[in-house]
Length: 118
Image 1 (cartoon, rainbow, N blue to C red):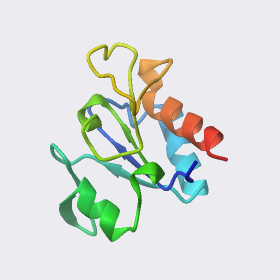
Image 2: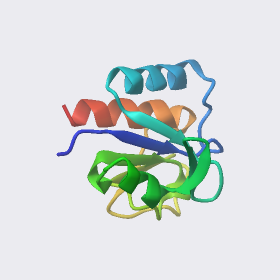
Image 3: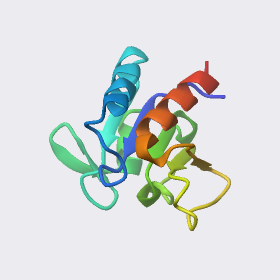
């Protein structure tokens, strides 16, 4: 299994200011995982400009297996796994992972992926 190198997350699906989300961001920083918040339907900010997720992945030389998404809006993104809340019953697929606690989706996703990919 590839090392986790990048996390894309939907701010509408994540409470970025929660204590556990802050711990997830810290864990990403320690593991040298880059984190991008969606800034549009399928765009993130890279070096001050909005870019699509596939462009960012190519620019940073990332494979889908090295990237995860957090939030149902990323279900169709070309990522190795996308984490959703257990309440997102309509979002399923082979690359969809369902968190145990929808309130701390970012934390569940990041910590689970880091632990599994050691």
